Length: 301
Image (cartoon, rainbow, N blue to C red; front, top):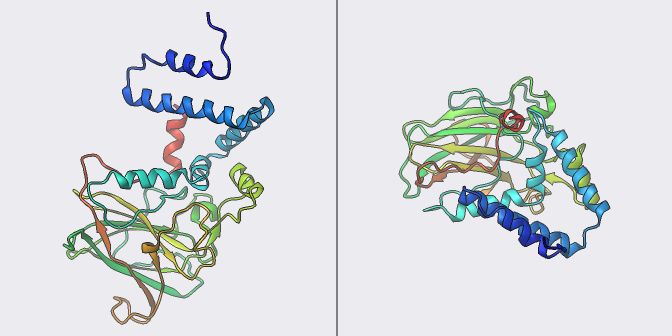
């Protein structure tokens, strides 16, 4: 029997996991143990601080529900989601349009809408048109590509917040035409604060961060044989465009709504954005996150 100290306990823990049959699980857990132990040593973690951390993670889990995913929110504000996104993009055989975060408010089962439809049920602000074309990296149109969109209202709330998940609004699933073209009508979303009423919000508050995301429209675009694209379009005149609290903005995704004679809907300001989809490897997906409701049953198993 060996007397363990703060250094030798790491090797002892790794030795007990040496027979893990799944090589990827072994690789991940070995690294997690090494880094967690090194973190505790680096900050000279005290028992009281360790307990505070346990209490915080417990509260994060307790805040999760079918309409709220506090752990994804935590990963977002710590930049972990952005890191996983960047690593995922780095492995691509080719890169198309820049990706962004799925975020904690994505929902499956949004209504299937015809091109040009309005996704806002009761708009109280001027409408805009969002339109463009989905192509491959060579510029060849991708017919019938799917385009899922979701956003906040003009008041800065998602339907999961405003309606507690009881109805869907500001969402729609569209199918491009034979030339890969899409368009829909909406209101300009308002930039918003992440939920500050839970443990993640309290952490952000204690760090003296503003907690705001700039105005944006989420897009999830897919087509057979192509890499699924999770991204968002960000309005460049938002005051928080340079300090997104979840690190989702890229310069190539910044847009503006303006008069556009080429818009398919005359009389409305428009945002034009053409998306490029890369070729996919078998089974490849670009989603860093999930529908909150889809995670709850798995968490209970």
